[in-house]
Image (cartoon, rainbow, N blue to C red):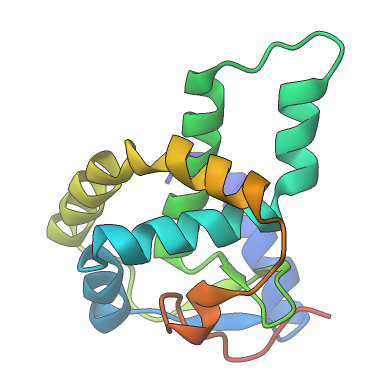
Length: 154
């Protein structure tokens, strides 16, 4: 991923707090094999967890956010989930983690890229679905769509 120094610092902070997420071939293939329905559910939960940021982008006075901006934002979130840096906690908020386990191989990264590209058309639908029903039901958590945190960041 880009910004390696920033991610290294992020990982150090999470690790010091005991906030780690187990990752590896099983979690990478699980993410890559999510159905479109499961991926949309994950996107809805990510949208709800990031509603303040998305609202600032959309409703800021400058209104600089475009559809492409929102899609790129959600695409970055999916990459962070895939790598084990973030997940949705049981309370519906996003948790930050230090991934623990082997990094994805080039093949796993290529599979991730294809899966995320195929999910891009789902993003606008997920944002609209989240806006219509802002209740945080945390379906992605209950459906086991996310990497398993070893311990949450406090």
